[in-house]
Amino acid sequence: MTTAATVSSTIPTVGSPSRTTSATSATSGPSSNGGRGRRRHQVVKTHLECGVAPGGQQQAAVPVDYSQLVDFLVGCYCSEPKATLNQRSEEKNQESLNDKDRALVEAEVRDLFAKFVFTCMRAVDQWVPIYGNRRQPEMVGLVNHREMCYHFFMSFFHQISITSPQAPGVPPSPQQVCSTFLIQKVVVWMLSHAIEDLRVLIEHPGARIARFTDGLQLMCAGIAEDAWRKYLEAGRVQRKCIEIMGSEPCNPAEDRLYQHLSGFFHHYTVNPTTGEIACCLSDKVASFVNSEFRVYLVDDFGSLMNLLYQLSKLERIASNGKPTAMAVDLEGLNLCRDGAMSLAQLCLSSNPKSVYVVDVTRLGFHAFHATTHTGTSLKSIMEDARIEKVFYDPRNDVDALYYQFNVAPQNVFDLQLAEVALRRARGLTVRYVIGLFKCLIAQPELFTQSAMMDFARRINDAGKALYEPKHGGSFKVFTQRPLHTSIIVYASHDVRYLLPLKDLFTKRLKEAGDNLYERVCKVSTERAQWYKNIEYVKPTSEAPDI
Image 1 (cartoon, rainbow, N blue to C red):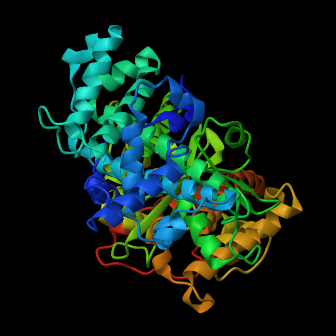
Image 2: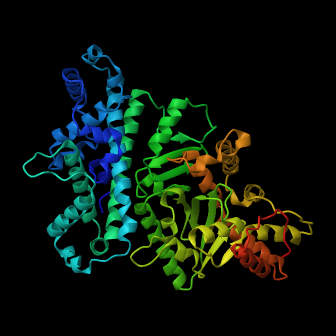
């Protein structure tokens, strides 16, 4: 299998360049300012020609005319008013750049290219739900003919590309060259997949496009990582990791750049000891694999299909009669049947060190209804009674799931009820329920190091500072894109403890006797049907009878 680093360092793309202002204007040439504009274009090209194509030596083996790709990227750069060289005088541009200025220019070019690839990725990604589960069984024979398969993929992705077709006898525009370059790179990567995977991609167009989107995202992350390295050389950022908001004072411009660059990635690791968030190229890199706290951002159909493939493994485990569970936590503004859902966080018993943050705002209805070629969807998993769903107070969550997405979770266990039952089992009078954060902090067994509990408090404070108005934040932070990295970690943090908390509470409930565990399961089922109220009933903080 081709590594993520290889893909990201050698890729080109398809998509809708017309959605990126700088990319679109790149096809129109240097400038409308006549000779002066052409001179500026040539000066920029001279400064950039040695460093624009990301990926280093990997690209030497690719049969691509890089001079035309350089023209495209330089065109993007010249159309960006905030670019460093475009803010200098014509005379100043004739001077040689120092090392930091050159690094900054090269960072800006890579940044613009990452934006172009990202825009193309989003445009192509929209085709996945359109194709859905259509099949092309007549094409499966291509799996044994790689060259024919290559041309089949190239033709298919050119057709869904929104780049205007090349007219007969007319040289391709820089934009068309870049689009072809991107398609070639991802197709070659796709052909490196195992033959069984390749057969699925040939037969199922939806899966094919989702995997293509995946390849583009790998490339995007690779280019962004290149840009990040150059911004470091230029002194615009001070580190490769991002600090949790509030950990250290940070220059606002530097923080905006961190948040911008992190938006090109889908994989993050969190170090609870230092509070650092690292962006990773893919889930195959060693730093991600070895991390104790891994986060997958699922905000396109390529990453959604990857999540669904993991969930299909959970289905297979459950079908063999083995216990399986999925922790669920949802975020939204006044979340209920009338309050929009923004994020869905999931943690699987088959992969407890990883949290999947599903961007419901971006994926919409398809977040729960898009299916793999085998029929797995988030809806089917939520409604599979063989897989236990672990919530902490599911009332508003199930109300939102049912009325917004027609999803009715089955086999729900409510940890909030378990917490109430255990306090009463100790002889305490319990009138009110407590929130998840307070519950977690009261269970020191969950935190193997004291630093982990400190981190829990820090990320809780950072999240509140971003979304709670009384702390200077705004609930709109959940709908702003790209998502702030502190919000991603805040959303991920608590759900990763729900499965260990379930194991801990289950042990205590069974030790308490008096059928306490069974009674909690019974009332959990009742709470999981909160959506059955004809009129919305706002949950209260009063502790129920169990």
